[in-house]
Length: 90
Image (cartoon, rainbow, N blue to C red; front, side):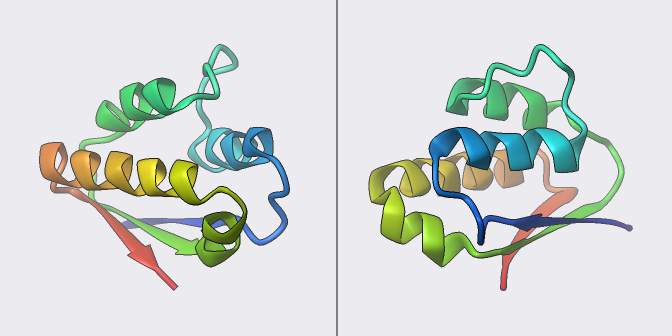
């Protein structure tokens, strides 16, 4: 079981949210830094069991309410398509 820790506590801009995704998931250099690219990269990320532990999400919900909701929707879709990936909010 692999674990990835995402921490959005210091994200003041949407670009910093995507930088956190890119760095922690080790997405390729050409990662598009948008929700479609996030979906594409996560949908094919791994066949191994993975837990993604998320902290600081309430901060981006306060700053980017609609965008944070869309990120949660991507997580939900990925969990359905890839049941080996679980997202846990701290």
